[in-house]
Amino acid sequence: MAGSVFGNIFKISTWGESHGAGLGVVVDGCPAGLTLDEEYIQSFLDRRKPGQSRFSTQRSESDRVKIMSGIFEGKTTGTPISMMVENTSQRSKDYGNIAYCYRPGHADYTFDEKYGFRDYRGGGRSSGRETIGRVAAGAIAVKILTELGITFTTYVRSIGTYEIDYDKFDEAEINNNPLYMPDAQCAEKAALYLKETMMNRDSAGAVVECIVKGTPAGIGEPVFDKLDARLAQAVMSIGAVKAVEIGDGVKVSLSNGSKNNDTFSIKDDKVIKNTNHAGGILGGISDGSDIILRASFKPTASIFQPQQTVTNTHEETILEIKGRHDPIIAPRAVVVVEAMTAITILDELMINCTSKLENIKKIYNK
Image 1 (cartoon, rainbow, N blue to C red):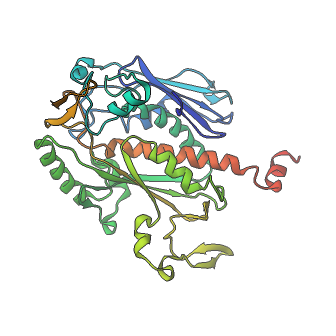
Image 2: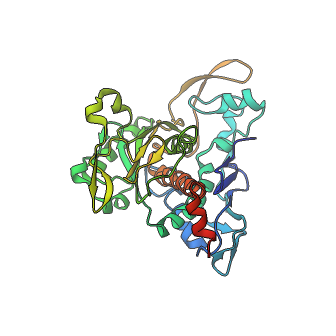
Image 3: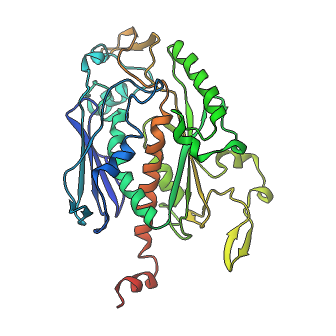
C-alpha cells in the first residue's frame, strides 16, 4: 500500500490497523537534542482517545504510547523515532455482518475495487484509529514549533447548524466541555442537538478550526508546494474531512477585491496587514499573520439505522451495523487537525532553511 508517508524533511510513516495488534508511526528528520518523553506524547493522544464522553465511541482503549527508538536520556538523538500504541479492546465479531456487505459512506467498496481484499474489522487502515500515529508525530512537531514561538489554538467551530459566537469566544472553555467548543452556550445547545441525533440512531457533521500564531513570513513555495496547498493535502488526508478552507475560504466567492484584499501598514518598523481575509498565506507563502484553517467533517458514516446496500456478489440487501461508533467525529479530531497542521508547518520551516544563502551562512559560518 502506497501513500502512508507524509513530509519531506520532517517525515512521518504511519502503520497499523484498527483491529490489529497495534498502530504507530515512524518519525524521521526530527533534530537531535529535543527534550521528549512518553508523558508528553500521551497528553496529545489523550485528547483523541475513545470513551471520554457520551459523544464518542465507548470502545475502551487507554491508547498508551511506547517510544521504541530515537530517544536517549530524555532527548532525541536525531535518528528515527518509532512510537507504538497497542490495541487492547478489539471486538471483531461486531463486524462479521459486513465481511461481504459494503457499508454506505465507508471505504469498503473502494478498497475491494482497488485491492481485491480488505480487512473488514473496523475498517482496517481506513479506521479513525489510524490517526494515532499522526497525533503522536504531531505532538513532536508542536513541541519544536512551540520552542520557536509558534502556537496553536484548535477547537470545534460548529456542529450541525450550531456555530460559536466569536463575541463569546473563551479559549479556556475549549477543554471544559466534551465538544471542545470555545463558547459554553453554543456547546450546551450542540450537546442537546447531538442527544436528539443519537436517539434517532443518526450522526452529525461539524467544522474544526485551527489558528496558528507566530509563523514567520516567507514559509512555503510559490507553485505546486504552496503552503495552503500542502496544508489542504495534509488535512484532507484525515478520514471524513470533505473540505478545507484557508482564511475567508468559500466566502471569497461572494466578495469583491476592494473588500477581500488585505491592505498593508507599518507598525514598529514591521510590515503588517490591516485585515486577514487571506488567512495568513499570500501566493502560497506565509505572510506573518495568523494562519486560519478550517476542516469540514462529514457525519460519522457508521449509523444504527437500516440502510440499503449491496454485497460483494452484487446482491441487494439491508444492512444494520453493530459495534461502538462516534455519533460525531470532530471533537476527537481536533487534535488530529492540529497535528497535521503542525507537521506541515514544521516541514516547510525546515525546507525554508535553504531558501536563502544567508540562512545557510547563519548555520555554517563560525
